[in-house]
Image (cartoon, rainbow, N blue to C red):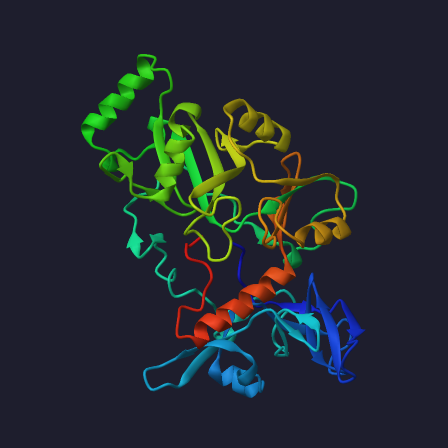
Length: 391
């Protein structure tokens, strides 16, 4: 999940709209927005309001855009409280977000979302932060030190200058599912107040008397550590079923953790991939002793343990044209569209603005499809969100 902010930024480029004489295409970082012709010029400082922003009614009315926004949040009397910004096409040209004038006191780079009272849209089914499957929440444990949450992957369009032309990267297909992680945690990294005394003793004995594969085995989502729930020898949640299917308890060693995307039947609407009748997983990253593996080491890890990887689309010198090309089209493991791609250095690198050097580029056609389907669901009185699982 990428960061959310509404920052003061500079206009990088302005181009004419091919199908409308009174409109222009304005470039903000890696995004483009449609605006009235002549209102702004290159170098102007403006506020960029990204897609999935909830704009308060007072602000949308002031900007005269309320009727153009969707997923309206209303009070019990039917009054509009806020409306959502989504990816749209205006006269056949993509527009992603809003540009508004900045206050003279606001500084370049300042995040003004709290001043404007703008919040990020959260789908109704996942707003509680709980992991759900067919309405049933999974039981969660407290997080353990050493069971690392996966990197929050930022959107490429917010950081278009992180990768340099020619540097070696790997581009992976981004699957639309639910995030999965599993690890073998060193028992000395666990806060014992959450562990029964007998379990503590067992782990210590395992540590000192040479069990084949010691460590405390964990399974979770991006943000949660899930309890193992069984009924008649069958796991009740998909995360533990996946861990059991691929024998991760046996394959992972002490201080190893692996990350993947679960997809297939019942995971995300319209995106079953090659698993329409069950659930599958594809792995995309691993760490040992809290250090992410370089790409080729990760490949060797998966090949050695016979673990399926996400589709690799490209390994080679970075170029923006290659990213845009690979982000679109059909999935390599399905007959439906690709959600997008993940770009990362083949050798782990750190960037001062970003942290770990890894970004996602979402297929624009996927965002348009998602917007259209959500509008259809909302018009039927159903939950206006394609995502069933929280990420």
